[in-house]
Length: 209
Picture 1 (cartoon, helix red, strand yellow):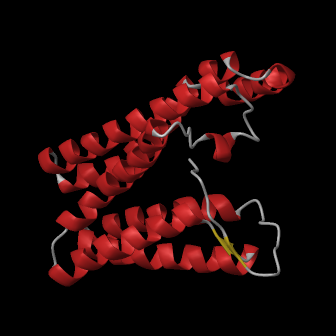
Picture 2: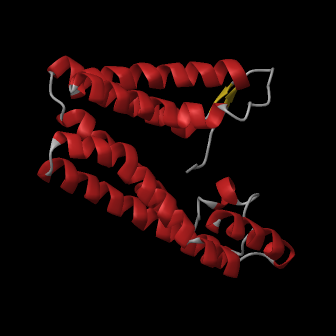
C-alpha cells in the first residue's frame, strides 16, 4: 500500500522497471524471513532486514533517481529499531517496529481527516477517481484498519512465540492488508466518478480474479 509520497529527485529521472517495486517492497521481508529460519536468531535476521532495506533504497535511487518518502521513513524506523535491537541485544525493539509504522499511518490518515483532508486522495486519486464522500470514508476505514493492525501486532508479539510473530510479520500483516483492500472495492465502485465507473468495475473484477 502507498501513501502520500515526497520524492527526492535529481535532474535525471528514469522510468522504473516492472520488477523494481515488488523487489524493493518485499525483498527485505523475504531476506528477514529466510535469515531467521536459517539462523533461528531474530537479532541476525534483523541485521539482514536492515541491510536489505538499505540496499532496496540504494537500488531505487540508482534505477529511478528518486526515493519515495514513506519507504524512506520506514527505512529510518527499521534502522532505529533494528539498531537498538542489535546494540542492546534486545529483540523487543524490532517487534515494536510494525506497531510504530502502523500507528504512524493511522495517525497521518485520521489526523488528516480531522483537518478535513482525506490524505488517500492525493495518492490513489488518479487510479481510483471517486467523489469526496468516497475518499473520506475510505481514508477513515484505512486509518482505523492501521490502528487495529498496530494493536494486533502488540497482542501477537506479547502473547505468542517468537517464531509465530515472525510468520505474522511476514505473512499475516501483508495478507490482512490485501484482504482489507479487496473488501473496499465495493465502496470504491459505489463512489466512483461517473466517467470512471467502467474502469473501476474492470479493476474490481481483476482484483476479485
